[in-house]
Image (cartoon, rainbow, N blue to C red; front, side):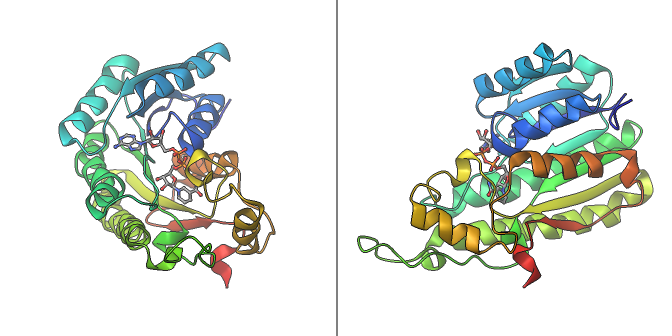
Amino acid sequence: MGKLATKVALITGAASGIGRASALKFADEGGAIMCADLDDEGAARTAAMIQQEGGKAASLGLDVTSAGATIAALESTVSEFGGLQIMFNNAGVGGGDLDWDTIINVNLKGVAEALQYGAPFLAEHGGGAIINTSSIAGLVGLVGAPPAEDDDIGLELQPGAGAYVASKHGVAGLTKQYAIAFGAMGVRVNAISPGYIETPMTAEMRDTPEGEEFLIALHPMGRLGQPEEIAAVAAFLASDEASFVNGIVMPVDGGYTAR
Ligand SMILES: NC(=O)c1ccc[n+]([C@@H]2O[C@H](COP(=O)([O-])OP(=O)(O)OC[C@H]3O[C@@H](n4cnc5c(N)ncnc54)[C@H](O)[C@@H]3O)[C@@H](O)[C@H]2O)c1
């Protein structure tokens, strides 16, 4: 029997990358999955992939910056599957050229509202586990490749980098606060801090051989991560095997933050 048999999970950012890999992994472990994403068609494709393998899944369109939509997603999941034990608050945007408000709204406010409404909801429905996606940028600052000749500034100085780092440090803090607040109510809250993972979010940075080599060199294992390597840790944290794990912000980064 899979480690998530009998569990129901709501996963945000499930249309792509880490969220899709996690939806597939959680379903493979026996869970019923509500795949949620701003990209509702992508979320539906993830659900269809699970169903094709004989798993249980449904999907919905969700903008994590809308508190009302988050509450509706929690209720829809219970209507669909009869319960809810796992929330994986994973949706996010990269730093890049995005402005402060967009990055903070999606990456930090989105997680804050998922916790504000989701933690008591899980407690009222018999307890469970919440996993948030932070980042190595939730533990340390980002370093960037030297700017290309036609770029004015390197990544470190881009406003989007500061906003991304602030948002992911915020997710780490929220994780600890909610772990303390809800641990005694049967809800464990943990976060994962991925290193650079090969998903659409990092595609542009990996676009040139120099860009990819720079990123690889940041990881002592000498390679980038795969979304399945984050999904495996998320499945563990979501499962009863992690029954005494609460309030951690766990690097899954090939050693990036070890030095
Ligand atoms: N890829 C990496 O190297 C890396 C490293 C550290 C942390 N992360 C974090 O992992 C998470 C997943 O990223 P990924 O690499 O799989 O990227 P991705 O771009 O492949 O997937 C992100 C998903 O989030 C969805 N999304 C964006 N805004 C949304 C919103 N407002 N409401 C609902 N869904 C929304 C997108 O539609 C997309 O499907 C993010 O929180 C990201 O910050 C990624």
